Amino acid sequence: MNGERQDLWGVARELTATAAGAHSGRAAHTVHGGHEATLRQTVIALRAGAGLAEHENPGEATLLVLEGRVRLTSTAAPEELGKGELLAIPAERHALEALEDSVVLLTVAKLPA
Picture 1 (tube, rainbow, N blue to C red):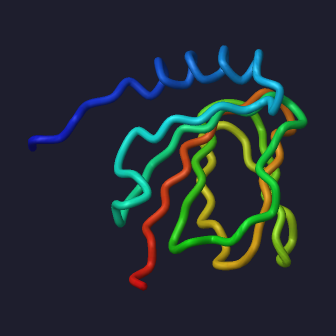
Picture 2 (cartoon, rainbow, N blue to C red; picture 1 turned 60 degrees about the vertical axis):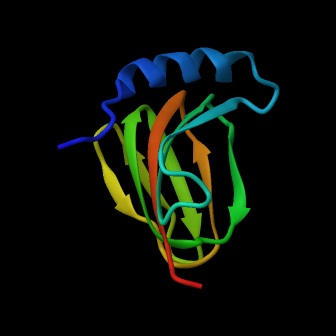
Picture 3 (spheres, rainbow, N blue to C red; picture 1 turned 45 degrees about the vertical axis):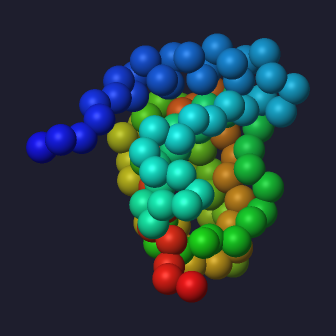
């Protein structure tokens, strides 16, 4: 295997510190891929009460909670997730809110254009 190894807990610690001082209450770092890649993985740290406003799902996506507790809302029933829980994000508009200081791993596989 010839991949790049990453310390997600180290990234999470750094982003948590950055989010604590950010006006938005959040910080993110893409650990794999990017906007030009089909597969992208991003670690996002959120202070309690911070979140991501409603937005489109650009493809297939999952959300893994590394620390804390979050709520994902969409036209379906809201989903609350805690540490270690994984959710396939619905293919519709959705929003994310941190119910407590949290860190998540967002994985997105873009659909072909």
